[in-house]
Each structure stands twice: as structure tokens, then as C-alpha cells.
Image (cartoon, rainbow, N blue to C red):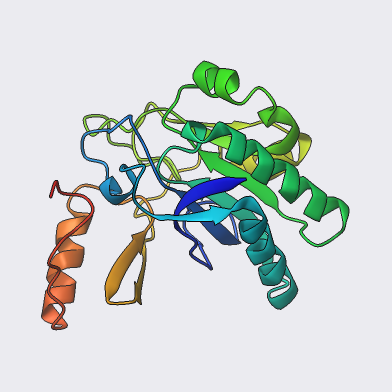
Length: 219
């Protein structure tokens, strides 16, 4: 089973609790205005991987880093490759049963809850929590891990309820952002507030780093 992947960052500490493995899906037809990840929209972008390759990456991380608390799946829009998402979720469950991975799975989607359930009717068995809803730039919020006030954090499993119910209405005065540099590219991880990205560009410029293209503006 092939899946188009934008990137696999680790550790991710700003999209879910603890130290997490990030899986950025490639391809999104929703196209929310103001999206900071426009580079993940094109379904022909990214790189093809097999689901087994992604699972092997998770297993290797689990062996190397005993503090792997969970997996965050985002993008891109995960429901636009539903068969691959199902295969990955089942594979992660197998890793759990073998004791290779013990964390939770959090999935971000631009679909509302009913749309996500229709696209992934198996989700309540394999995905612990989901953050649903399109990003609406006109509805800013300080809710943790959410970019706009309409988005909802919904636990789906018992593990998800234990892990995520305390965060349902949690807020962050100033959300944290991660910045990494790899292969000549600067990657921002997290959910910025208005003005954060301009401040990031200015801070990099002061360090002698000029961004030629950015994912949050049309090319």
C-alpha cells in the first residue's frame, strides 16, 4: 500500500501531548484560506512511501526513543487517502499489540466530525482522538492545538478520553512553534497566531536567513 507523504518530523512537541512522531500527509483539496501548509495541498507533491516503510520508521523511533508518547497525523488532508490511513492505523495497532509502541494516535482533519466518520468509519477503533473542522482565518482562538474557534478536539477511544479530555477546553496564551532546518529548507511546526509568521521571517532575516518561498503564501 502506497501513501503520499510530505514529511516525517520527529520529535513533534507542539501538536499533541509529549514527544511525538509526526506524519504529514500530502494532498488536500479543501484549501482553507490562510493555511500555513499550502505546500501539502498538491497531491503530486511529497514522496511516495509504502505504509510498511512508515511503520518501520515508527518502530525504529520506539526502539531508539523510549519517550515516544504518540503519533500525530496531519497534512494535507488524511481522509483523501483513506485506504492508506486505514492500513497505517491497523499497522500501528499491531505495533501496540506487540508492545513496540505504547502511545496514542491523534489525527487532524479539515472535515467536520460527521464527514470524518463517513470517510473513516473504523476510526473509533484505531484513532484515539481527532481534531476536526476547516481552518477559518476569521475565527481566531487560543484553544490548544487548534487554529480557529470552530475546530473541535474529540476523543474517540478510552485511551483518547484519558489522554485528551483534560485538554478539551485548554488554552495557550502563546502557542509554541518549532523551527527546524533540513536540506536547505526551514520547517515550521505548530499552529501560529496572526503575525507569528511575519515575526518568524523577521527573526530569520536578522540571523542572515532569507526565505525565498514560504508555504503560507501562494506561489
